Image (cartoon, rainbow, N blue to C red; front, side):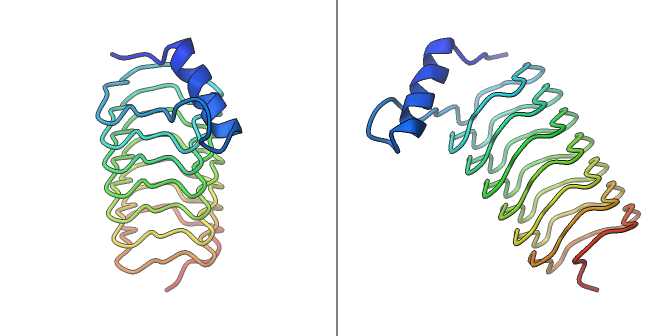
Length: 166
């Protein structure tokens, strides 16, 4: 299992603050972070394409604008995290806990979210095309303006969901 070094995190922070003119964008594509603890980290716009975050503790972590395409977040704890405008296309979010997470503008095309816990999550203007939310908890979620073509909700909890296109 990999860890993020303080140097990598510092350089990424400088890159974010300078809009890319200093520091270095965090690039951890395909890295195994299974079981890692990254509470409250600011990882905006980082590249984690194909990374493995299964059973990771990512509570309050900021992945806004990050590339998590094809990543494995199954069984992870992401309560209160932010994924605004992130790319999670083809990602595996099965059984993960995303209570109250922000996914506004997210790309979740063909993502596997079977059994995920997403109560009160916000997907405003996201792309949920062909995503599988079977048996997921979407109670109180907001899908207003989200693309929903091919969205699978078999057995999902959808009480008080907003913006669901029938």
